[in-house]
Image (cartoon, rainbow, N blue to C red; front, side, top):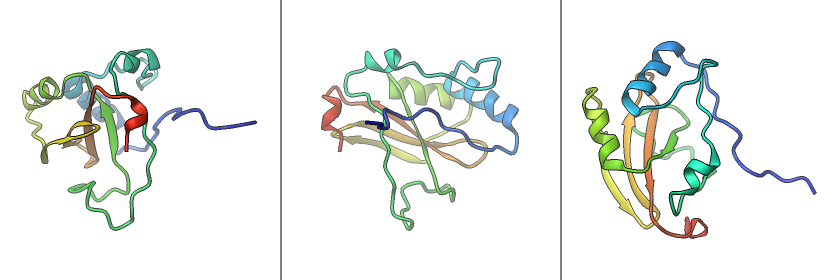
Length: 132
């Protein structure tokens, strides 16, 4: 039987795609490939207990993505939230929400140059099936 086995990618339009790639490379350390994106390998996330890919629609009136007015948010798994935020601060990027400690891990929100809320997530060291 055919079934969905995961998220194959996140693709979106940008007003300044090259500038945005550069921001993600500098601020978050993404290894942008010559073709213009990043391929996150499952093996990299698998060493972080509790890591998983989440798909979840939010109500249309949610303010969870604020201050962005976009109808989506990007969540990026990180292995060390404090170090990632320190890196972002060296580039003048401050969290727009305080660090949230949740049963599923630690979260912080930053905003990219195009106004998209980026949720940085350090998964809790739990079984991924415990998410939720």
